Structures are given as structure tokens and as C-alpha cells.
Image 1 (cartoon, rainbow, N blue to C red):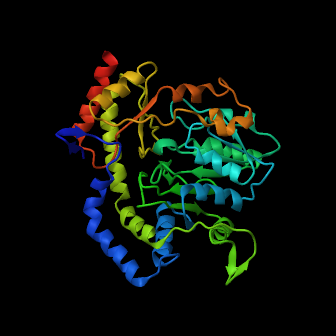
Image 2: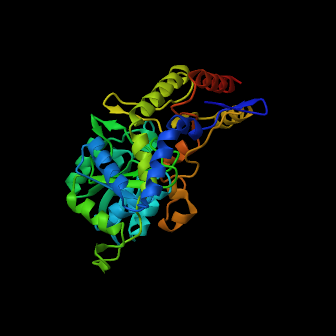
Image 3: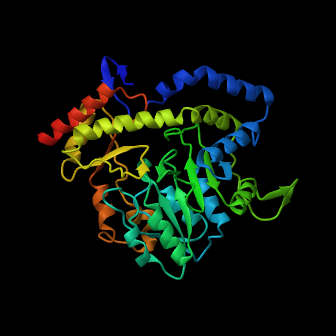
Length: 375
């Protein structure tokens, strides 16, 4: 859906209002029921949502949390990753992926990405493993499943834990398995812009390991093992009832939302495939296109300018790889250390993609891009 403002049609990156309108009455009823019940924290909607997410991913445990960042942090806590340990991850992701590693006192170790998928390159992982390495955080970037067979084989060989940062990939599948269900733990964000988004912050951890889910349930509530009894130092990270109720409603529509995203992505690729590097989707996996991100080596600024002049949103995710961020300067990385990530940061551009986007608007967006590339 586009918007008309002062007779000018604008196309946003995401139109949450368009998604909300068909669900409005159902969501109002659910919220009203919670207000009437006065059960706001760790109530029946949280419990039911956890069960529904676990069933969706064919796992035994799911724990609702305050954010996706908390899910990453508490997964590392549950896996006993601590000060002095190293955790391998990608530098081409949102800051929270590596930030969570520092929360437990561990050191992020960045491995370069594959240019086709923009995910961590498994062929470059083993050279970064040291006696201090304890885990790998895999990111399924933009909804694109990473190469999990290769990563799990490396982890098994070296005795490493695997955490899947699936914040952008709810509903994506790798060889028929839902992402987040393959490693030791999967972490999701329900930030409003996500494929499955709340109306505020929210997150979840899933796992097939009852020790991990059990520990995270204690950690999220101050390490409480009984009334005013605390066996260890915990945290305050609880998905609230209102967000859980909203997410339960939206979960029922998620596969339809993702299918429509994939339809828009296929349309973009059919038009742009010979002009830019479009997202790659291997035959054995299902990309859910949290973002439609293409690459152009020398025309990004021109394309971005053309889109904006036509009132079309466009965003660069991510302009500064994590190893080049000031916050991680202490790690000692320098320009040129991870060349594929650095090159991608200078070439990627994300354009509008959401279930309600009119295909004619998508065609128009692609046309603007093609015109800018030719000029």
C-alpha cells in the first residue's frame, strides 16, 4: 500500500498500518480481554504463544522474552559462555548480534561473509577457531538461511555451541527445517518491523534442549526458583501478555505474509536480475525476505537518489560492518581485514517489501532503479 500526502504518492519501506487494519477488531478484543483480566505478565497468552511457536518450529521449548537482543544474551548465559571465551560471528549484521557477546564478557571474533548470500562464509570459520572459541552465532540475514550443514559440521568437529540469530528470518526454512531449530538455540525478535512483529519490543528463544529452555525461564525472571528465592543472578526480560496476544493473532497469518513477500521478491528479481546482483535463494532453502537487498557496484548513490526523488524509501543495511565500528575498535581490526563485508557495505541497498505492497508499485520501483542505472 502506498500513501498519498499532499497529492504526492509515497512508498515506505514498510506499511504497518496496512497490516494492522484487517486485524484491528480482533486485536482490540484480545487487548480488552487482557485489560479486564488484569493479567499482564507471564499470563496465559504468553504460555499459549510459547507453545504455538514451539509447535511451528517443531521444537520442545520456547521462552518469551523482552527482545531479540535479550534472547541472544540469555542464550549465551544458558550455554555458560563467559569472560575469556570467544564467539565467532559475522560482521555484516545488526549491532545486537555482537553486542550480546560482550554482555557475557566474551570476545566477538568476526568471520567474513559469502558475497552471494551475505551470510557468514563457512569456509572461513575454521581459520578463526582458537582454544578459547566456545560458540558460533549464525545470522540468517534479511531472511536468507545460512549454510547450516557446513556450520553444524564445523561446530561438531570442534565441540562448539551454535546459536541461530533468526531475528530477521521467522518462517524461513533450511532443507525443510525451520531456521532457529537447527542449532543449540534459536533467537527471534518481534520488533514491529519484523516479519512477525509486535506492537512494541519482544523476543523469543527456542530450543530442543530442556536444560537451555529451563535455565532461560529462570534467567528471564531474576533467577527466581520460588517465591523470593533466587539461585543465581538473573535478569528481567519477560514478554508481556498484550504483546503475546497480538503476536498470537499475527502468527496465524505469517505464512501468508511470507508468501506475499516472496511473490514481491520474485517480481523484483524478474525485472532487476540482469542489472544488479539480486538476492540469491538456493533450491534447498526458503528465503522470507525481511528485506529485499540488492547490490550494485558503482551506482548505489544514483539509484538511492532516484528512488528518493520519486518518493520511494530505500535504506542501506548496513553501511559500517561491525569490525569497523568505533565500539569494537578495541578488537584491533582494520580496513581490509574482512574485504567481502566491507565491499558489501558499500554496495547494498534495500527497497520496500511487505505483504501489502501493490505489485504495480513494485514494478514502478524496479523501473526507477533500471532508469537510474542507465543514466
